[in-house]
Image (tube, rainbow over all chains, first blue to last red; front, side, top):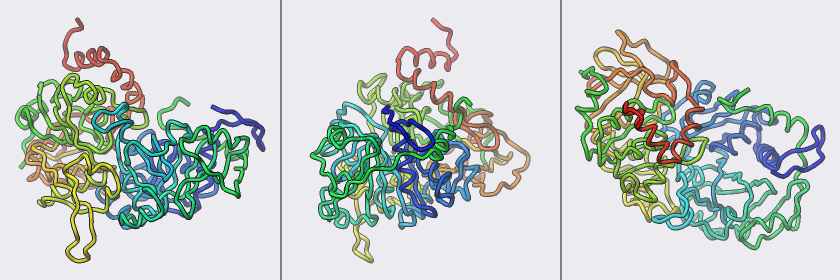
Length: 261
Length: 270
């Protein structure tokens, strides 16, 4: 964990905290958000406690507009069902809610991501003889296909940010700017990748991910070193504002169900 | 009318070597007690179908019950990997394991088709992904009205569908509430069905949002209090997240798993 200093109110934070806060800031109040477990779930629940109290959180277990007091460990924890506006079946969540394009933002993570924002959560290496067998698809392929836009939250490591993924579990921009429309994917695909080092966004012409922001205190060279392709840097490179005291206190007050108090 | 029987009788009657068996329950109401009884009765060569294999299939695979796994997300939720599943895939221990892999949307629609008496289902899915290259139950179909190309997935019709529910009445009507996943579809898609329940009651009191499976689509109901633990049963007990975390250590090591298995089978430690 990288500690950076100083910020307003609090003096240090971890790179993971900066990532969750940057990801939370990217969600707008009132959006309907399909949330994956782990980093996306933390960031979405943080946003709901900060600037986006009316964020509609949807999990693939069928919980619509859920407002958990504590972070779920799994996608279908009781805390999600108990605090939901409605709980629907798994076929219904995918067929009626996700598939027709009723969800604004899909919030995903992955083990590998390539220069066009394609995501791999299936295998490292060959499918039949993988070096690492990962959990697989879950809801991600259709979340990536059908949400109006996709935001990816992932730790920035050279082994994860690769030239091309070993397996396309979820399509980002395929191999270029026209692939999504050729494939009939109706959502816009990944509009932003938020990492513990900065923010990548697809170039409007090429759909290749370029560095559009570095987090406070992070050098561009470090981001390049952790990226497996020749990373372009936007001419308008921004610097992410450091976490505020309120953001850090809120994030640190969130506990996962079953964690010791 | 569904028969009310003990869990041991139910598994003995319904589950045979070589069957395709779906134990469903999406994070909630996972039928652990039924899976453990299948392990105790030593079933072999099963095709195990489940969207999220979870700990229950990790245990059944490690115990040597399975020869094939049909699934869409195979991890220990919030914790990490299913190490018995990974070991079987990588080394064939304790038995070789073939896989048939889908996305959640694909699996959910396969169950819907199976429950609906249709040979396949249509969805917007899989386009541009690598799964259709490896899974022969994923194909595509052209819409006869618009000409649009859509994904097609083959129906799932297991020999046996097994779920855990909160309650049944004495006629075998089953009541499920909270996160209901694909349990209804899994039972309706299956040739035979077993429902384990927290309790058998004289009368089912209505619960908002509950799913009811009528007695004439359920073959056997078996009372199994606590039968979903360490997952949870809304209204009865919470998910045991500590047990999910603890499984990681047991599952990583064949010897530690062997001790767990001996204890499940009621064997004396060597």
